[in-house]
Amino acid sequence: NDLLLNFKKAVFISIYLMVPITIIFIYLGKDFVKIFYERGKFIAAYTNMTQSVLNYYALSLVFYSVYLIIVKLFYSLSRYATILYLSIAAFFIKIILNHFLVLPMKQDGLALSTSFVFFFLFLFSGFITYKILKFDMRFFYSRQILFYFVNSIISLCFTIMIFNIIPVYGM
Image (cartoon, rainbow, N blue to C red):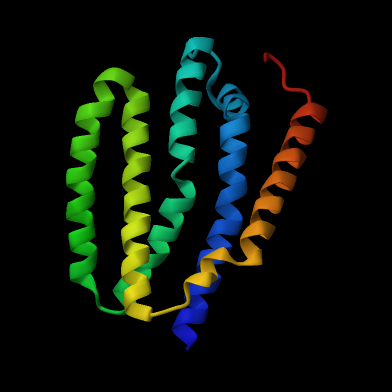
C-alpha cells in the first residue's frame, strides 16, 4: 500500500518540522518580532501585539500543515467534493467564530478563530481520510510522536542558546 506509506511519511515529516517551529514561535516569537520589525515607527507596544497574534497563529501550524497533506491526498483520489464541503464548513465556522471572538479579543480573536478552523479542518479531514484509507489509528500514537516532542524541546533549547550567544542590539 504505497499511498498509505507515503501519506504516513508526509504527515510525520510535517509534524517533525512544525512542532519545533510552533514551540519556537510561542516561546521566542517576541524576539523574532523585535529583530524583524522593531525599528523606526514599530514600537514595543506593537511588538507585544504582533507577538500575541503570532502565538495564536503558531498554535495552528501543525494542524494546517497536516491538513494540506490531506488535501493533496484528496486531490490524488479525485475527492474534489470532499474538499469543497470541508471548505464551505470551514467558511461558516470562521464567520461564526469571528462573530464571537473578534469583538472581545480584536486581532487575537481573529487569529484564534483561524487556529480553531484549521484544527476543525485537521480533525474532520483526518477522520474522512481514516474512513477512506482504513488505516490503523495507532499510527498517530506511536513512539515517533514522542520523538518529535523531544526534538521540539531540543530545538527550543538550541534556539534559546543561539539567542543568548549572539548579541542582538537594541533589545
